[in-house]
Image 1 (tube, helix red, strand yellow):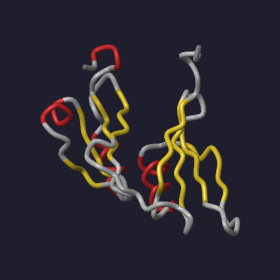
Image 2: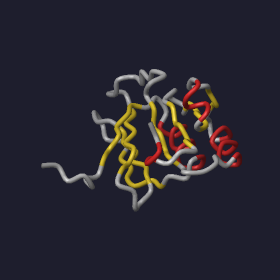
Image 3: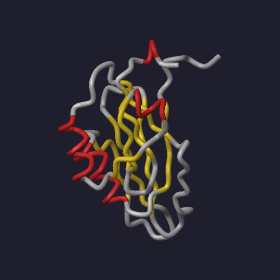
Image 4: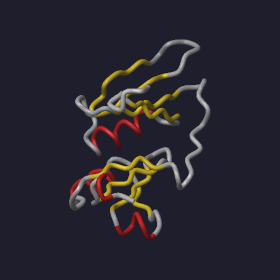
Length: 132
């Protein structure tokens, strides 16, 4: 049986790790948890997250990586359980994000931004307990 508190890694390719780092670290406020780069024949790696969270985002870059192929349904949703701070949205845009519409449901319950690779981050005003 899997422990429901097990740590989760979300892995995605990135065409520009520096741009992705600006968005997620400078914009969103995640920490760099691990970095590996410059290894010949291997990919570059950037792991981001909040140190106490039970998840982290792994971004892989370099010549060995499949190009990002995000769709409108590739969502990373963060449930804020309250209003989305406009200063946070502005910071994410300044850090390379682009505000996008994600359809009636998410546009009603949050703010969606595309990261530099086109993957979508939803900042939801809802809490996980009332999400449907």
